[in-house]
Amino acid sequence: MDPPRSTTRAKATVRPKGSGLAFWPFGVRAAVLLVPLLLVVLAVAWGAARTGLGLETVSAGWVLLAIVALSLLPVLLVVLSGVASSGGTVELGTVKIALTAAAGSRRGLAVPRNVVPEQGVSLAGPGGGEAVTSLRGLRGTEVVIVDLEDGHAWWEHRLLLLCSAAARLGRPAVVVFTAQRQGRPGQFVGWASPADLLQRLQDGDPGLRKAYLEAAGQATGVRLAEASGPAPSARLMKELGLEGMRRLTHPPPRDALNPFLEEQLLARGLDRFDTAPEEIDVPRLLALFTPVLHTRALEHTDDDAAWLRAALLDEGDYIAFTDAGRYTGIMSGGAVARAALLALLPPDTGA
Image (tube, rainbow, N blue to C red):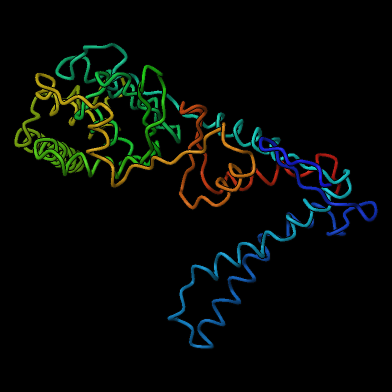
């Protein structure tokens, strides 16, 4: 009778037939170096065949997927060799733990409520500068977390300010939304790109679109004035309604053009929304962003084999990780595949 299968831990077993790398005799280093070489050679060969054989109308999607799979074949053979030589057992639970830890290391930075360190700070006063200072601290990170808490922590126009800066600078690349659900804080709601969020916010409120476009136009005018010389510059600044605002456009101590000029001007233009803000709770978030919001996540309590299969088959740019619904981290799709292979690779395999 076959031994019973565990529902919580899956194992893959290969019987070793000898010592060393049974399926790949050339060493780990050769396998790793061969991957990019195979990728380039196969891609070039496909390009030449596509042109020479008149296959321009053939969809390249599956072909490119096959090219990537073939390029990774040496590494997969090394993994199988390592499994065989180390006794033949790999626990998928170990891979799950490794991936979860890797995702946790990329969890992201939490943005202050409404992009200001203190609750109730207005963009009309010094709060505008504090908001931009908060944004400046986020530009070096890939992922930021916007915690909606109980639905009273964030306003739509403050989220617009965050997304405007991220979309313009290219960082952060991902905004993760969490919220309190059924009394449990930090529950994952979804993630999206700042550019998509920015567009949806403008589409949903003409007033926000007007404020955004005005700030972008003013910033362009200031940059034009900067290159026009003192006299034209003074005239343009007056026409832009920014006369006497050099401390905003050229803040001390450097007196150089403000690198966050667009956001500083946008904060100034959004201050009027503070009097009657639109709060964002989960239903409002879904109403605004469902077309661009990625709500799927890998739940830690799922069966190991099903969990790992879902991780490797997910075709999204990023994959979110949760534990009992609570957000724990996020990784790019490519990083998930690499981390899974590294977790399977025996540490004592030599070149």
